Amino acid sequence: MLDPNFKRSVVLLAEHNDEGTVGYVLNQKSDFVLSDLIPDCPNAPFPIYVGGPVGNDTLHFLHRCPDRMNSGTEIGKGIYWGGNFETLKLLINNRQIDESEIRFFAGYSGWEVGQLDRELEQNSWLVTNQYNADFIFTDEEENLWKDIVVGLGPKYAHMVNFPENPMWN
Image 1 (cartoon, rainbow, N blue to C red):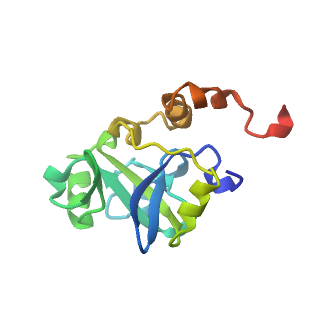
Image 2 (image 1 turned 60 degrees about the vertical axis):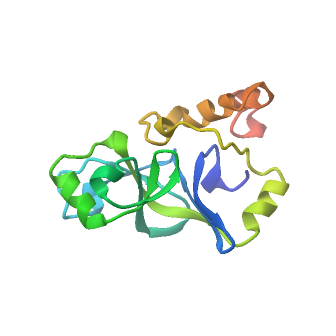
């Protein structure tokens, strides 16, 4: 992938339908925490990740606590997208949710109808439907890309040793 927004990125797709595709980059942490963006949560040290190059002025979240949130759309086994933000703020301010249960994103990754399909046909992406929800909520985002690629098997594992820029070789 030549787009610098996606260099060695792990993207979780939240929605893929006849209107387009939405996803979030899981391993690009920003310099911000939630309390920097949401004054109603003054003691919220949750990191903010760059979800992608679209809508950087919007905040999104994935979680795995639908029992306390009472909202969210299940997008994978044990992974929920969005929900009632007022409920979430109460949980955060009452310290009833922690970093291992939620991930915040500024912006998102988006593709118009057919765009991602074309990119897949061009082999621009490595794809897997096999994942562990712990990968999504890990605080080890620096190694996430490597762990995912190695998990694809020996056909791809050697790629983790490639330099980021082939001209460095």
